[in-house]
Image (cartoon, rainbow, N blue to C red; front, side, top):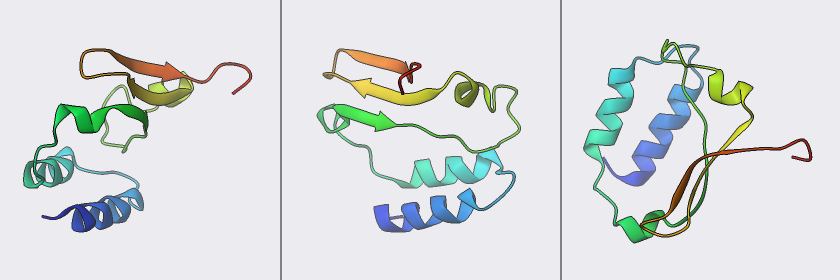
Length: 84
């Protein structure tokens, strides 16, 4: 699966109330790996409702996403503060 097809598939799944984790695994498994250096930067996160017991918890914590400062330094949980 190419990146454009994967993006289209994610968009399609976004419209579903519930997503089977196997559907997401199928997409991830079909994509080529990326180089660690390509991950450096700010990444906005989101979630699919897979029925996992943690669904909704990141949103409740006002989670933004992750910041990869370098290939060796990552802030895995970045949340908005009172000022946004």
